[in-house]
Amino acid sequence: MKKWLLLVGTVLLLMGCATPAQRADFKKHDTMYASWEHLKFSIHGYKNPTLKDADKSDTEGWWGEPIEVPYGVK
Image 1: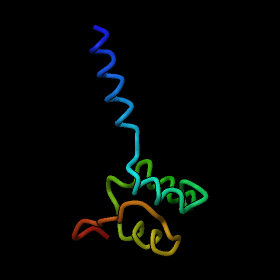
Image 2: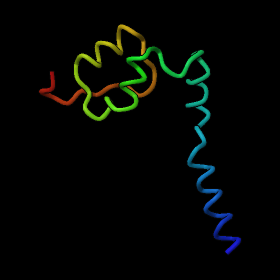
Image 3: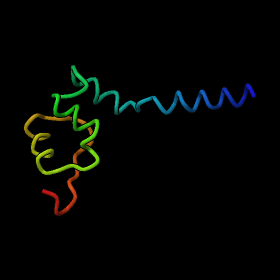
């Protein structure tokens, strides 16, 4: 039982860790999000991105993974 708990704890710990490249990108910025719009998009807008979101990303200088707008979405 102790081995099982140790294994589960280790897996949970590693799941929360960032890679060195992710940490380096994060340290370049003094905040986690570029703006309130960036925060709102990161919470729920990323599932259905629009061209408006991509434009905001470009103008506000959002960081993180690039926004991929599906073909045909306006």
